[in-house]
Length: 404
Image (cartoon, rainbow, N blue to C red; front, side, top):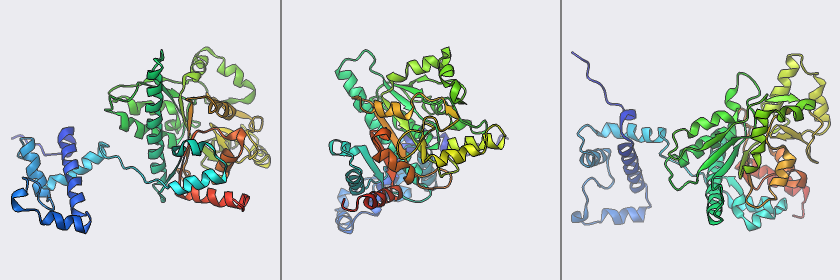
């Protein structure tokens, strides 16, 4: 006799899973609403009661309602909670991390960021801290990117542009990967989202055992989007000796990606701090040193020259880009100086993600300050950071200008 197959939430239809989740959240809202509202609800006349809408609505009532609405008989009160977690697994729930607007305003004032006065949304301080804060920074970053996508798409339609698609450039690294994942979830069934073209900004991951650091791998998040994007990869050696860079990017396959770089409307990028051993550029240089392919004094010389951070894997000091300091160059569509020029153009946007290190949680404040203060490094139009970094930015700004 064949064994009867068990029930599993992953096998349920999206419609039922979503309905169970929505009903469960409504139950929580009624259960924890303000006392005055709760009292008014309990005084509701008996004849005003609705089937399956007890107060507070129990798991049994939710199960009864689902069975009635979906013509089922197998939904029990014990299965409501697995359905709720299945909804979370399918990313039907999107938490909106809170923003700290006063801190954003203070940062704009201390660092003389005039853009903030015209566009208050250009600086986002995520009111979150702790081990999962980078996930929240990435979530807000993705939401900012989606808002920009719709803004750019609307303007292109109004101009009746020949290419009404919105082109988005994805940088490498863990933060950009989380942004891509969240963005794909947000637009999965959004028919109003403009057609996207996704560009890989860098050629790949630095180390062979870390391929997921390559932005081309993030394209897979978008394969089940209803209006699936088009993709523009960048296939080349990830890093080349500085003296060979121009030759490499002139190669036919690489050149095609660079020729399309100007199409990009929105760039998503993060950065690394020079004092963080987990930064991709620093890890790669250390890897070359350990293999004997690079003199160990290279790192010492770069640090002695004032290296504080790198963006798009290009090092910079508090004064500006350090173009000649590093013996190798990552193949990337945009150098820092190109991004600085880019953000001066209308309808071109760069979203800078300024969360902590994804491995150790160390804040990158020292590396972030020059990106706010130094005109030669002000390569962003939108900044997303976390509460701890924001507090450190304010402290650093107040120490630099006590009268501010």
